[in-house]
Image 1: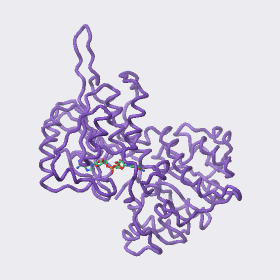
Image 2: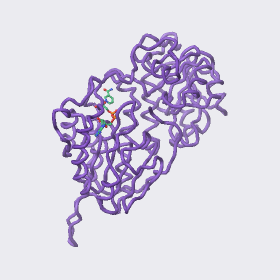
Image 3: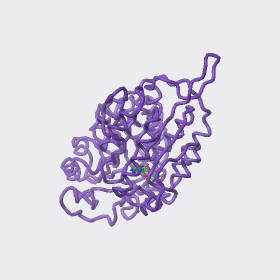
Image 4: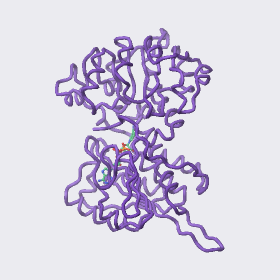
Amino acid sequence: MIAIGVPAEGKDEPRIGLSPETVKKLVKAGAKVTVRSGAGLRSHFSDRDYSDAGAQIAKTDAEAVSGADVVFTVRRPPLSIAKAMKKGAALIGMLDPFSDAEGLDALAKTGVALFAMELMPRITRAQSMDVLSSQSNLAGYKAVVDAAAAFERALPLMMTAAGTVPAARVFIMGVGVAGLQAIATARRLGAIVTATDVRPAVKEQVASLGAKFIAVEDEEFKQAETAGGYAKEMSADYKKKQAELVAEHVKNQDIVITTALIPGRPAPKLISKTMIESMRPGSIIVDLAAERGGNAELTKPGEVAEHKGVRIFGPLNLAGQVPVNASSLYARNLQAFIDPFIDKEKKTLAIDWDDELAKGTAIARDGAVVNAMVAERLGGKPAKANPKPASSARATTKSSAAKTAAKTSAKTPAKTTGVKRQPNPAAKPKGGKTP
Ligand code: NAD
């Protein structure tokens, strides 16, 4: 029988690697699941919920993982967890493969097989396992809700007997998974929404969500998408023209949500100090790229900066602030990933190491690093290099995120009430850094 263990996360991480719902499915598939007592509490999953779903409850992390063939985590766990695991067992989570190389090396040397879910190839078959998408989608939503809560005005147009309240203007920079959900959420709240991106493919998606696309649409822009579907670094000339256009636009915006990223690079700086100074006092910027340095010049990762009445939020784990949904979706991603590797007849773990998804996400096996990009950062060669970094593999269904945002948008009527929770942008989870 395949044994699955779930330890508790660190104190700054509210999410958990398995939900009661996924425990039920795994138990049905023949697994024995052991969850550390209290590990789900910050996602409002009690020990009782887990035991009702068929899990065993362990008193300590060591007890939860020591007999496991597979251990599920959200973040890269401390070395003690890997040391408590059986040699050859699999540790699966967002292992933050490009930071703290020494820590990762030590983890690899324990002999545990490491799988970094961030490296999941972006191909159709792996969509249900894409943790970056499931978490970014929630982060895009939460960024707008937090901005709306902090903004001391209303978002929708209101025509009342006492006069008219104008609609707020929301500008989304970077229209990937998070940006699309941010557009959909801001539209639901009744704001006038504009968005920009350097990839021409998103223009239509922006329009389909009821927002206006703003960009310098020259020849370079028309070619600006990599074969992988990600953004390219733009030329200095393009950046200058785009910055001028953005500067003109930003000064009339109330809320700016920035999500712009280029894989493997620091976040592009899109909002200068001068642009921030051109905004009205009371305006809000939520910088979702804070983890990689931020898209705004004055962003302080993990903090709220204020400059001339404009507040700049630099949250580090927004998905973690919607932990119930974030854990539920994340757990489904993990379950979808492990399911094909469970031998349904023998009820044992049968990882197909030649499978594209196992190859793409495996970073260490038998005590050695096996991912070329990770090995390079560790200053060596991989024991058995994966042919291509999986993160550059490409989606065949580009507009899937647009469809998600549109679907949820269509189901939810525009409402302006009910946003009660105050943002907690100062929450500072550890790890989660990307290259
Ligand atoms: P990301 O987090 O890498 O970047 C966010 C956005 O920032 C991107 O749209 C990018 O083009 C944009 N950007 C970068 N530099 C910019 C600049 N200077 N100005 C403005 N915008 C800039 O993106 P992501 O959320 O990972 O999504 C990337 C693509 O992958 C999207 O097309 C998404 O729909 C697609 N995707 C496909 C799958 C799948 O098929 N399995 C899964 C997830 C995402």
